[in-house]
Image (cartoon, rainbow, N blue to C red):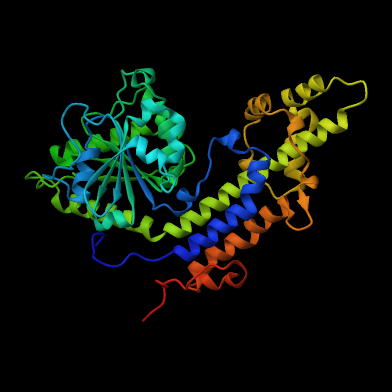
Length: 431
């Protein structure tokens, strides 16, 4: 039912309101305390309004490109992704919706600020030559974007690719709403590059789905052994209480081989499509939750920088060497109760605190004298930066999220003040 010919829901009003909250309440504090230099994650307007992204990862020749061809019906068309038994995909391929079949070069995608891929320019021209976009007039792509990645080759060093492969993967992982990690039953060995990939996926376990592809190549008994071996191989890499969902099937247009579990494979395929549909349905909820999570991290970062600065001012005397004083604070923040003070005085979870080591690098680039105290980040007309971001976290974003869940009219949310625009279509209202 993902390919049904029905109009795409219009969420422009809610997205406009979300964008306004971000620019007025979150971004000022983010820029003032240079949060982007700590996390290397800058949110653009294109990212706020972008469709859900589904990322395909895994070793070479496990069926990632074939699976995308199958889901979009690209087989035997001139725009089908090239597949084969050897390593075939050498580019990051982004499949988007468009009025007609068209290929877009990576340099063009990065130059277009309306798209959400402009930050990829920072990975250099070598990478942009390995980035390609394909526009396809497919109903599913009106609601979601697919990203096919080069297969992991364990005996190839990252430097041989000519661009920072792991950093690029991390960029896509940070923005993906659903991550399919695909395996072939005959290639279950876990090497250094796959271990690195799962380290990058840490914290995103709820978005990960494991796919054991080409399952109809195995007899029932062998399939059970391979399924167990897959979990045994991945157990040290996914250290969570609840393991990711594993789909077992063969995702390609050919019929399943005889004497295999056809009913099981078909049910698994339907479950995967329902999973994909759920991500599309929850697009706005996920986007608002993502912005709120980002706001919480920005707030914690600002509180920490403020605490470092306040400690520095308290320890400075007329005869002190400022550089030595601050070096002492950065080298051992626990001696000055930097992190404990933040936990004691504010509504901050210890699990959300950044790594202490990260601030050594951060202050190595940004001198402490370049920042102002939070108490000085206020104006008569604009209010205080900290108060605005706390109001966004505790009131504005939850209200926007609640308006979706309760089926209220999102445009009624402060639109008289902000000028959100026309009334959106309400997909929860019964007609």
